[in-house]
Image (cartoon, rainbow, N blue to C red; front, side, top):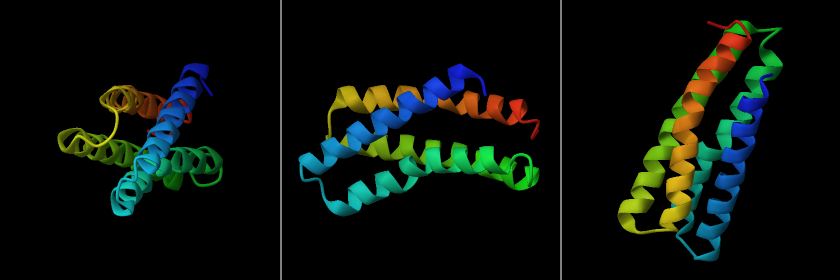
Length: 117
């Protein structure tokens, strides 16, 4: 796998975990945290599933990578909602939004790398 994709996935995941911890520390209502975590944590999960499935079920692997993009987009929407509600650090929100936006084309590149397009 291309190292720049792995690095971006790790960076994004680290930001997700840090922001999630911040939300919990600031006693943000559990439903807000769960909505954020539902999509953001599935990014790494679906990438992993796609990687494992690419040889044995390429069609399903391609769908997992498509779901990653949807979860990234939903995470960005959640971050924008947090931003408008002034929930969480604007610095962390902006860093995570930037990381998510940068990740979307890398997911397409990952599909190409595994010859799923």
